[in-house]
Length: 201
DNA sequence: ACATCGATCTACT
DNA sequence: GTAGATCGATGTA
Image (cartoon, rainbow, N blue to C red):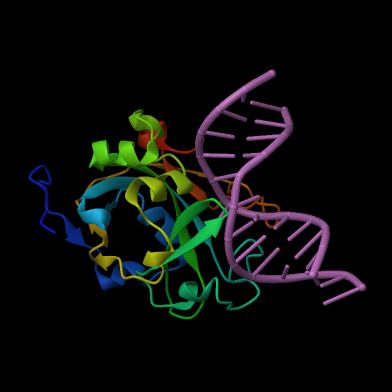
């Protein structure tokens, strides 16, 4: 689907070398990038403002005990989506990182709304832009992301990860949310200047 | 088979 | 602050 008129700057896909580093650094560097969904025939987008890293040897990582049917997409190529259901209600979107087959990923926790606000608000049943995408389950609902997108590339519609050159500035590192295992490590990151859009401070 | 728990969110008190 | 919605993976038998 074509870009809407208001998409201005030089939006470009992330280059292959972007993925060629460790997952914690990818979790930091993906903040500021633009996530686009064209699901449902509607262009919706948001800027990533909050992420969490999940890596090999990390007891909180879904891949910790090896590959299962649920987490299989985590072992796919870098730059693809791992989508899973949490608490029986909410879909969560992860970016699979590299190297392929290690089962590492970055959880997308919050976005600053950019485009398609009306559709996203309708899907969410909520008109407050600050609450539209401020949580992993919320952003999937707003962008119509479900298990149907599990394993898809993030370089082609319906899901795209784009760079418009935005500088997110300094990041804040905090412990990840909702964990019992390995709960202390500060592998949740968010942009200080975008803090109004994050799920929690 | 059954019980428990989890990378959540909303609505209520 | 906490109850409740409800799915899939996992552990115990």
